[in-house]
Image (cartoon, rainbow, N blue to C red; front, side, top):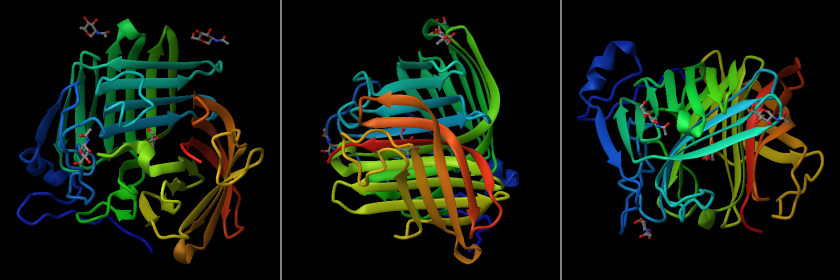
Length: 372
Ligand SMILES: *[C@@H]1O[C@H](CO)[C@@H](O)[C@H](O)[C@H]1NC(C)=O
Ligand SMILES: *[C@@H]1O[C@H](CO)[C@@H](O)[C@H](O)[C@H]1NC(C)=O
Ligand SMILES: *[C@@H]1O[C@H](CO)[C@@H](O)[C@H](O)[C@H]1NC(C)=O
Ligand SMILES: *[C@@H]1O[C@H](CO)[C@@H](O)[C@H](O)[C@H]1NC(C)=O
């Protein structure tokens, strides 16, 4: 099944197709919200049904179990380096991988070409989030870090000027793959839950990312395979996830995003995405639409917390009429390790559709092993 751009229309609200022609109409819809560094008390609501503002803030506020963040990454064409940037509006009790109780934090980590990992968290005095059309912008004051996205999700620019923390530079990205939700394309009324109580919206499944940073005096500048998404919940992450495989990459002409998780309820939840020439080939959360399994060393599934890191992943994706895509992802390097629970890698991909022409590419991917 092929989707072309599906207009997002909300009755009574000027939320319109992704076209530069209507961007002036979006202007009037822009909405700004300020998030403070301390959590609120009491209940907060989370949106799990899309409403024409894919990249906006999806929680009414951040209480002590809530988390909502904007994630960007890029992997270099030689799969030896990456840059990962996250703008957090999250409680450390909701998402226990945060180093401080500040709700508003900026993080940048990078696998440098010499194999060293640079990682810094910078607290922000407040975060000002603006939603315009499907896109968003955020200003993390005091951290001197911000992103600006266009209403049609096609361009993103991150600027960081935090010399006190050793980070200066920019991340510019042009999307080459339409955004999507866990089960389908960008339009109103889509389910945004990728797993129980976990929201996910993928603004840029694949983009040409131009990174240009100075990190602790080291120049990091290249053009690579970029990505941007956001996830959120008003419930603690670890209440709902047992293990989780996620990643993205570019394989020949295809842009691929995979997600395969075991919920704390013991069920498997998946989301598959493949696009080609800026058109969606498949975007599905149906059981059987995708299967991701560890491969090589330590390929036990489901993984235990004590299971070592795998050598890679095997991915099988149902492309409908186009056949079955088989991808082998191979670890090139660990780009972040959080205790034994969390690992993020950069790596290479090889694959084909129905045993056809072998294609190659690079990928950025991660695994969580939370319980079991
Ligand atoms: C935050 O809000 C959610 C949703 O109403 C609620 O389930 C949760 O208990 C609240 N957390 C705290 C710490 O009050
Ligand atoms: C943020 O920018 C201001 C103005 O350029 C500068 O004085 C300040 O030191 C910067 N903050 C950090 C954390 O680098
Ligand atoms: C969720 O969050 C992780 C950690 O920041 C991020 O790498 C990933 O892209 C997100 N994916 C999904 C499917 O929620
Ligand atoms: C790699 O580069 C970083 C930043 O310049 C430096 O701090 C680190 O010592 C280098 N590591 C190695 C193994 O040379």
